[in-house]
Length: 274
Image (cartoon, rainbow, N blue to C red; front, side):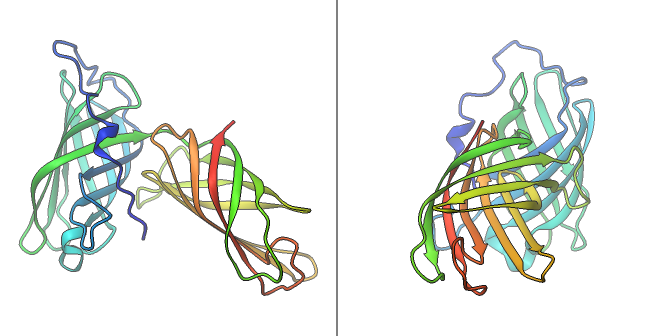
C-alpha cells in the first residue's frame, strides 16, 4: 500500500476570503479526494491519518467512500479500511464530514474550510474516535485531485536493470482515461496505453489500474499469439492539478532490446501533460 502525504503548504492561504459566500448547496464536490493530517513520511515512525477516496454529490448533501489509515496505530486501526461518510458544506465554505462506524466502532470526523472555486481544497482538522483506534483532533488538509484523463509525455532514466547489456534512457507517452465514478473502495479505475522508445527499441502496451488521491498504480500483462508475454508495472503520483505524472517505478519485462525473456528493466522520470 502506498501512502502519499501532500505538503501542507500546497493549501496554505487558500481559504475563502472573509465575507465571500460559498455556493454550498450547488457546489459539485464529486471526484477524487485526498484528506490527511500533516504527517511526516520521512520519519522512522510516521504518525498521521490519511483518507484516500471519492466524494459524490453537491455541497448541500454528499456522500464519501474512503480508504482510512491511521499511521500511528496501523495494528489497532488496520490499513486502508473502507469507510463511508456523509457530509455537507455551509454558506461560508465550512465542510463537515462524518463517517459511519467501522466494525470496531471507530468513527472519523473531518472539518475543512473550503476555497470558493473548484478544484476545491481546504484546511481544517481530522479526528478519530474509538476504543482501540484513536487520533486526537489535529490540523489537516483536503483537496479534490483533478482528473488524470489525458496524454502525458516525458523522458525516463534507467533505474536498476536485470537485462543483459546496458539499458538506455528513453521517452514515454501515457494516454489515460479516468472513470467518471469510483469503485466500491473509493478508487477510480484507469485505462490507457503506454508507448515507449528506449534506444532502438519501442513498444506499445495497454494499461489498466487505479488512481486514488494522488497515488497511481498500473499493472498489465500482454500475451502474444505465440505465447510470449510482456509485463508492465507503473507506480507513481500525480500533482493536485493532474498536470504531470511522477513515474517513480516503471518496470518493463522483458527489458527493451533484450533477447532474454526473463530480463527486466526499471525506469523513472516525469511525464508532463501535453
